[in-house]
Image 1 (cartoon, one colour):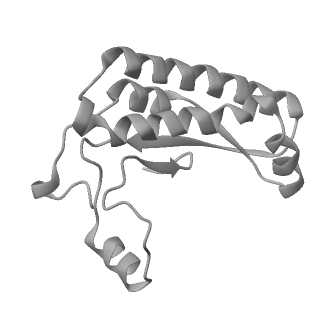
Image 2 (cartoon, rainbow, N blue to C red):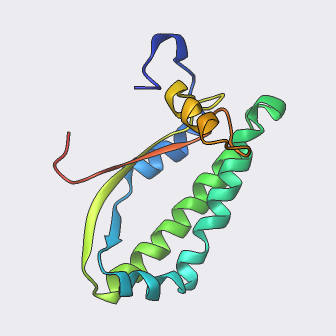
Image 3 (spheres, one colour):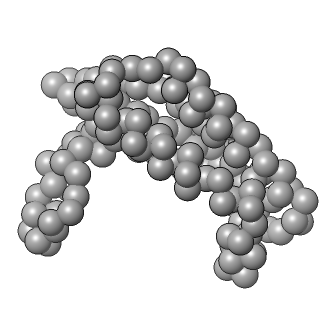
Amino acid sequence: MAMRRPARMREMALPGLAQNIGASAFAFPQNLADIFKLASDKAFAAYPPVMRDIFKHLTKLAERGLKPNVEQNLTGRFSRTHAAAQMVLKKMHVELKHAQVLSMFPMGGLQDNTVNRLLLMSSSEHHLPNVPMTFFIKPPGAS
């Protein structure tokens, strides 16, 4: 809802990455023990640096503008990281649920007044006024 408000319609940054994420299959382990075991696997250790770099790129778009080479690099890094991690999950033979992940990277970020009000009421001192990226996990068969 925060994105669809007419006054807030924004151009999307990283459209290639959003398309890549939306077209990728995601498997989620269901047992806590499996999650802990997989957390130490090096294939999953590559996700945080990729996501950190995506976050940094998005938060500095207003200063630096679009950088097609950087955006292609981020998309490629995500693809390689995701493929390796999903392969590990398949080989582990653990209970998995599959879903699609949809993402949005709006230029200038996404802002919701209700969330900002809750942050202010909770005396939050370290938060962003706008969220640079959002993700939605869509179970199979959901519209």
